[in-house]
Amino acid sequence: MNKLIYIADDDSNICNLLKTSLINENYNVEVFFDGKKLLDAFVSKPCDIILTDIMMPNMNGYELCKNIRKLSNVPIIMLSAKDEEIDKILGLELGSDDYLSKPFSLREVTIKVKNILRRTSSIPDTISNNILTSKNLKLNKTNREIFINDTLFSTTTKEYNLLELLIENKNKAFSREVIINNVWGYDYYGDTRQVDHLIKRLRKKMLLADSLCKIETIWGFGYKVTD
Image (cartoon, rainbow, N blue to C red; front, top):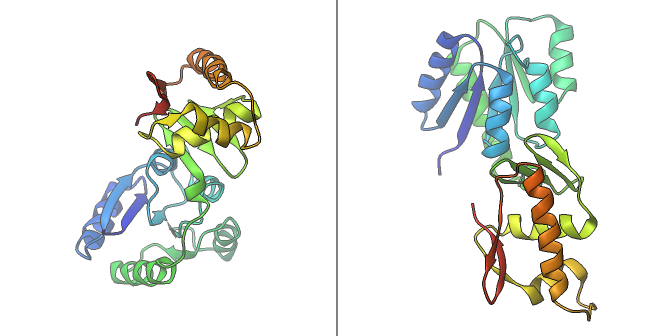
């Protein structure tokens, strides 16, 4: 599968030039005109590398880099007309992998992208793998937090464990017995109806939080979440 590149820059001409150049190298490319739109897209569909300007509306490149680093180790190249040493140092300190000053050579950008992707292609991005999504719900396995519409959704330990199990295995139905083993543990000898009680409470909380993610009942068997 071709690598996916996200570009954020409020200059449409630069976006188009970069996109055309990288598509010619057989990359898939999506462009955004501010950092917030790129961040939202990344949460839903992580890319393989990010090229970002610094000065943009809604969310600048520094803020974008800082937010991306909370989610992933994806490579980030900053492209900016700000070529002072302090600007480069700040970008690198926030987690960017490289920094190019405008005007830049399209050939140089392409070479840097190729080199970075070659180095990182064999390294699994375990952080981004720890972000699970289902519609407007986002689950962060690293810090065991759940957000619905970007608002923190409070859960008990068992509620969190159940959602992680179902969302990590979307479209797969789980029996009550398997849910008991995963959420309560193999040494639990109580009634499997506890699963139904937990689902009922969790559904009510998710409904009140306007969750579009739904836990579906598989009659006579168990439960699942569909994408």
